[in-house]
Amino acid sequence: MAIQTELKGMIMRALPLLPLLAIAAVPAPAFAEAGDVLLRVRAVVVSPNEDSGSILPAFPGEEVDVTDSFAPEVDITYMATNNIGFELIAATTQHDFGGTSGVTGGIGQLGSTWVLPPTLTAQYHFSPESSVRPYVGAGVNYTVFYSEDATNGLENAVGPTSVSLSDSWGWALQAGVDVDLNEDIFLNFDIKYIDIDTTATLRNATLGTQQVDIDLDPFVFGIGIGFRL
Image (tube, rainbow, N blue to C red; front, side, top):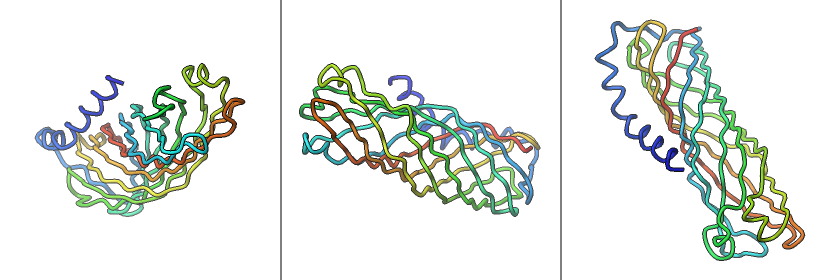
């Protein structure tokens, strides 16, 4: 957790500074053009901006929170015109969720899950002829939850427990900038907001079926290197 927090802080501090530093190192502009295929490899921090309902029916008023996660990410962008591109990202992260108050808060972490949120965005790239090219985007996301597990703390309290989270359709927004290093390689800085809503279901013999609705809605902060293919 401490490492993830520090990495998140480093990325957020670097986002406004690194493009300015990189401009001085740019030897020549490398234009973005229709037909270009761009591959980016990023380090990302996925930071849920969660809004939780109660754990029902047994624990009204008791909500959950969700941890941040750090992971590598790969995306590919096709430039349909000089200004318009389409980006598809691929990354997967693991998150823990736990109680925040009452009985479940005393247990702490309740479960964990892996999250796979493929996201397709349509982007508008400003100044495609420049070596520093900001862009904005909007699109659609489908999130798959897999390899869900109950924690030892939960199972010690209530016995063997199965955990599942429902998949989610949602929308996504992004903003970023590409900064050329040479004709084929560039730095990338990117922020996304992804709409992800899920229902977590926990089943065991002691409490039966308990459910909690969670709006994850994470911010995704990324820094990486891009390549023209």
